[in-house]
Length: 236
Image 1 (cartoon, helix red, strand yellow):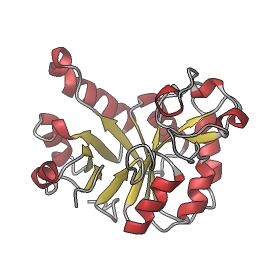
Image 2 (cartoon, helix red, strand yellow):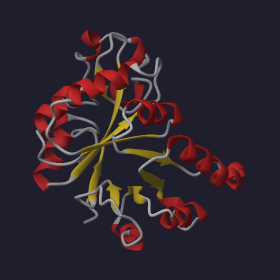
Image 3 (tube, one colour):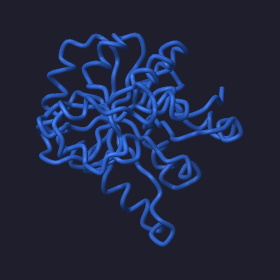
């Protein structure tokens, strides 16, 4: 077993709390730092090729703007507020500066256009970073890029359960993505922790994290089954 995860507790999009400590904000990451939790966060790319920390494709849910983040330059994005807070959309390099190697980073790369641009820029930004980090994605194309271009970088496949009528294809789809990407670890939807996918991962001695655990009852059920837990709220 590789022991990729030094800290079992990973704060989902930082240690956010409602609309005043928004997800994926520098304030949420500061709160996780105070507790010494690892952080999981999302990155995507602006129109002018700046790597920003943001989960959604569109800006409406967090910023009230009916635009897609990839269609806007960073000069526009940096003026937006997250919910009613004073927090703004961070640049990835701002997160690196804030964390400065103090806690591990779980970097989820969201689906985006022109695979390779974000990935090359990401690796340039991480080149001199001294802290521990792992990259992960739902997207086979993104993980395949890293497999080809940065084969020594530890990468994780994120996998969720399909809608009910397609659940019989869950394992087939998982195996397809796994064998195409040869991920080093699996970030598995907690609903699949009693599935044949979970059993496959254990047989292959793949490290497992799960998401997103939101209460102590669910945490107690699964914590011995996985190597690390992506959580929200105060469950510990």
